[in-house]
Length: 256
Image 1: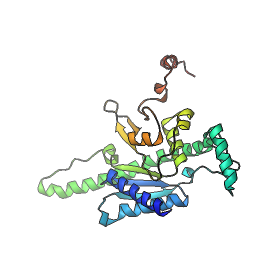
Image 2: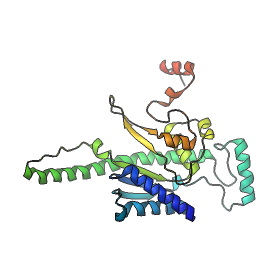
Image 3: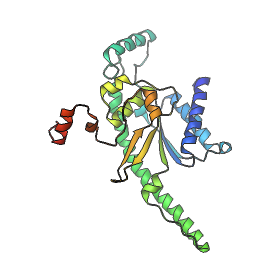
Image 4: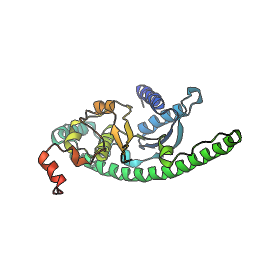
């Protein structure tokens, strides 16, 4: 990282601490040096007792599948500039760099990562909830001597303070969001990278009627990425379709 990059990472750490103060964090980090240096600055800030941030960092895993798009092995600056110029005409999603990746390749590997993330969250859910349960039971036992009873929370309550941080790269982030929220290729092509070390936040919600959990991209993040409309998985992806005829076909079970 440059000096400027270090300052940006420190600001990200401060913003993150403000956002999740008093809560728990598990992180995934790209193996690229600049990403690891960013994580190290964030982790140091969150663990600094003098900063008084009170964020419990329970772990970090290096994750190769969230590395930046591969532009080739030994890159010739002139050839890379030429290739990027061609990519603007061809489209970022399908254009493949010589000896490198297309956006579609990155999309495929972040899809695999999201499957792993889902399994990890279930495991964290079990572990963290059991620990939370034990801590609450201990508090109940100690407090009972003074006629105070603590209500034991259920597993969903225990997970409400868990946060997942993914330290990756601009295009990788956009493709990860594209895959998670089932955005179209056109929506991806019209988006652009946010500022370096800018937090992109997905807020968690729970439907009061069904109890179903869903995530929505924060409004500030949408503006930073130039994404329009409701970017969430509150409803099935086909509900977002603007074609009334297709929407009607879905209702009749005819859309293939």
